Image (cartoon, one colour):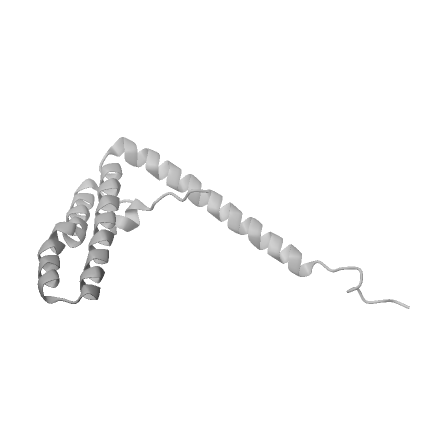
Length: 125
């Protein structure tokens, strides 16, 4: 089962946030994770740093790029009323399925814990 990304967590907002809050959160998150802010740091590290520090910064830059893509995707969905309504319905359905699966697993585990074999039953004389 593929998991639906939680766009509200990505933007660090509540599910009842208005459009202005979404825009502010988007701008803050983009500013924090945009890969362009690493360019100067990377150039400086390449000149003065060790190869391991350059690799670490490159990994951090790649993670920032991925996060920027997620933030853009989240903003694209949550800023459009129709897309957001569809997303909220899918998110609700998925959470309900996850809840049902957890209940089912708990019941199966309980059943397994309580199940006894013939040999484990006490013998009556």
